[in-house]
Length: 104
Image 1 (tube, helix red, strand yellow):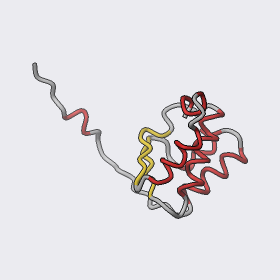
Image 2: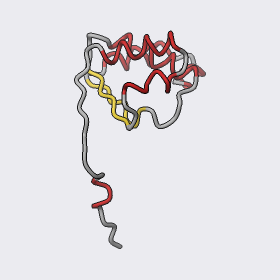
Image 3: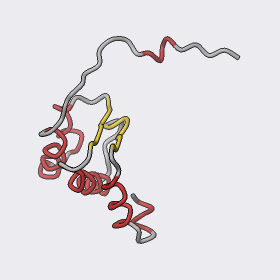
């Protein structure tokens, strides 16, 4: 999104993302998003809300997303667009990555 802002293709990129049938946001919450990233996420979710599927995967429980996002008003807007129509799937058990063996 930063590159799209820099080369004046931001609106075009947002429109393209809005048309994707299923958008996957992986590893959500690994780091606190920067201010522009929060606004980008809100724009993306606003365009997709009620129109297309969005899958968010991460280690942070949704009850901590306000804390992660910081700014209360922006956090409310983002969380509202994600949670209200969400189907939450919580996976339990040990990581499957530990089972992988690397052979050379």
